[in-house]
Image 1 (cartoon, rainbow, N blue to C red):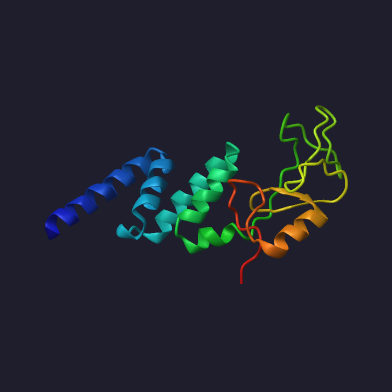
Image 2 (image 1 turned 45 degrees about the horizontal axis):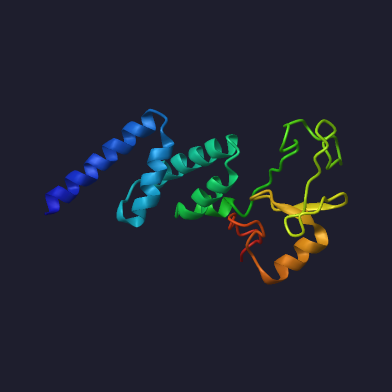
Length: 164
């Protein structure tokens, strides 16, 4: 019984090393998330794979999936990054044109950022979560976060407030 477990562990390690070598971090991270603590692998490699996969997802603008991977990976250093993000989108989410300084309406396609709470255009101060990029009117967002820590966008489930 013990030798088959070691053998299965070895096969899994070899398989993940193969996929990582080929650049297939998606498979590596998926296996790590599914198996959780049932499979021990060096923490530095797990961090490297998860970090690379999250960057890949963000490059393809799959922010919700990247957030879910961050949340489910079980690596505290990766999960804490979700609360410390400092990047934000400075381009139009429709046509990708860079927004002019202090402008929330795209000059090319005329799209205006809308509030995650009321769905109305935000033409004044727009506040957003640096982790998931969802936001809206300052007053609406402040009111929402008085009673909830989760993002107001359905399906996002990002914890937008800093945790102690």
